Image (cartoon, rainbow over all chains, first blue to last red; front, side, top):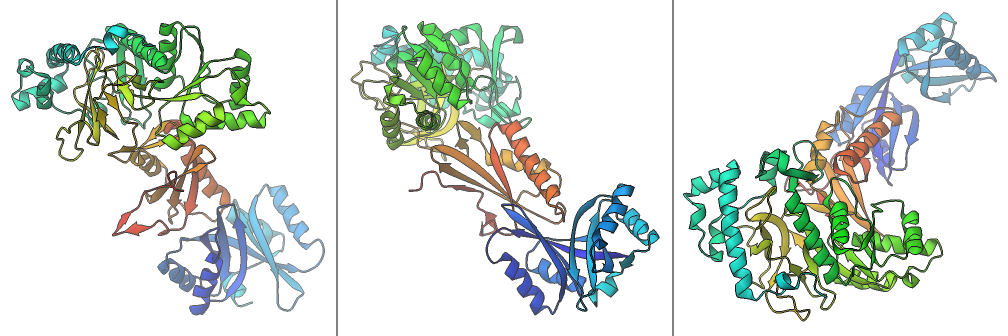
Length: 143
Length: 434
């Protein structure tokens, strides 16, 4: 139930992000979700894309340093307390969230949360045990 | 004033006679005591007795930094370990450092030569000397310290760092002389201004600056901003330390080489041919009197010209022009010698890094800054910021620890470091621009 996330190293200067989106657009790759973590000098762009292998190969060919990370995608009802319930569960089990990001589905009533746990397998197990809808990569890419 | 009138004003023939006698004795000593030199002599079919004139120094083999590294740590010493009373070393990663040893007499000589240097700069036994050269393995601190004491002055062993406290001590102790790097002198002036102290109004009257290259413009800047006379000093640990050559306050026109102890030549760095006075070349020293680690024709890699014309201060010694460049890729950053190859080995030893790097040296205000740009690659790349920052700080820490210089480490995208004809441009030194 893990989802492949593409990470890209970017120097913190004008035009680098646009270069990534241009290459993906030309390769016909759709971006499902993204987050950008930055420092004063560099950033790490994290993407969930419609076609991981094509995206990775395209960026690599063009000189970007890319990585693959297993993240966990969770679908919840978009209402107050939804995220808090999940974070409380994780806290009780001592599972640390390295980072996360979220987006709302097109229908507007569901939210998708992308988690990077320090212990991915235990995280998935815990969420599923508690009836949380952990969704697969295939489903996520076609949402 | 001249500290050692006899030896600093010898007529040329007397100086050359003294140098020849010492050179002959030196050749005998190293042939017997240093296997490295015995091998070199034997390979050339040369005997110590073949040195009959001063010109014959040209028959002798060169020595360079690599020879010292190859014999790390004590392989080039010419005396037994119990005769060594002090060790100094240049910075470097393991096996790359050059180590020098001094006998009791070597330290006495060094003290004498530094005392000569202080007097040439205009200092007197009544002065208070604020010594801001780093104390430790680096020769600057202890070299200037012992010279000040030999002169009979009072030495304040401040060492480097804690700049505001240094300003306070300069003011409270009313020091007359300061020893530090030229860039640090300007930094001190700025710090004093920030503290509301006009450093020009302090009793300080002489600055003795060395350990990094500087220009005539910088001298004028320092003299104006600190209200002192700025004197250039030259030295290197392999030859002795500070005090190998010193400017006189009278002329401030070239550095007087302590020729009774160091035989100087300038050579073409490529062919090794000896050049005539006035021609720019690489400075080469033979340590005529050193006991601990005497060196024949040590290649300093510093570029200069020699001037044998008489000086109005009365000294008869040959002068070397201020060093303006190097015949190798050594960088001097805030007084610390840094070879790009040292940075490269630190990067290689850091997990996952490849040696695709570039060094950018800039001067901000009066302080030199070193930025090390390293290309990220897949094996060390992570989706988490903290992992990448951990690599950056590890490299920063290792550079500080092994080389003694603070660097800013910056990760960059692959292929961003300019490659010309397949060969990367490793060094961008912006200090002498504009």
